[in-house]
Amino acid sequence: MYKIGLIGAGNMATAIIKGILKAELVQPNDIIVSDIDDNKLVPLQGLGVDITKNNKALAESAHIIILAIKPGVYEPVLKQLRDVIALDTIVVSIAAGISIKYIKSFFDRDIKVVRVMPNTPALIGMGMSAIAVPSNIDESTAKKVETIFAALGKVDIIEEKLMDAVTAISGSGPAYAFMFIEALADAGVMEGLPRNKAYTLAAQTLLGSAAMVLETGEHPGKLKDMVSSPAGTTIDAIYALEQGGFRGIVMRAVKACAEKSRYMEK
Image (cartoon, rainbow, N blue to C red; front, side, top):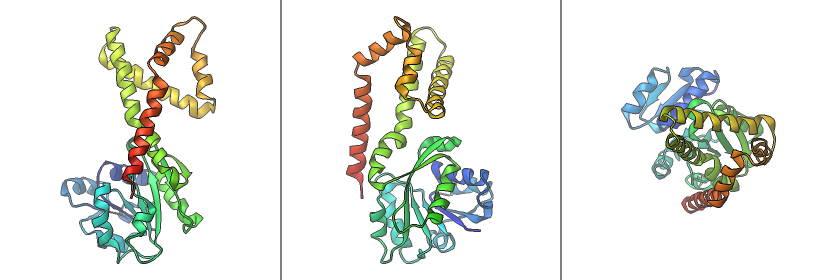
């Protein structure tokens, strides 16, 4: 059995731990978590995992180390770990803008680094994680990382050069979806719906529509046309969206996010 270490005990780390335990990938005492904040560590003890404030001790005992920390904290943490990470240890980065090359630059040996971009729906087991696996990672090692994130939702393997696009679509995408749900609900309230019912109608509609795309495999345009009767209500709504530049606004938002991700890249 292998040990999994997480440096950082925030929301995403907690989601990863709960996913691992629910999938029974390892036993609770095979997970060790490090953070400087007791308020984040103490609640995790209830899950049966080991906690510490010593990143080096964690790195010496874990076979897989997930860096669940903010991009600005990577440099000091990697400097702590540079002398203790073994060649067979897998380091997993989940931060936007932190490249595999940047992480490896802190080490004088060819360590194993995998880059993953999860998203916040992982908190409820419905996440989307994109995984970039470099050439020095064998298939069985990559599979271990894939299995961890598959416990949080869906996974896909991509080339690292596409990670900025992934960040802009699935990484930041939940924020766009939440804004659309909020806008739909506001419109429902404007039309007389109670707000709680408007949120339920809007959120379930997006959830069901997304499930149709994934489960039917049909083009989204075809599914849209199924709702749009000739001279009906839906086509008038689509016309209003197109007049407002809906598609272009979404594409510009994704492009802006991807450009910011490239700017942050280390």
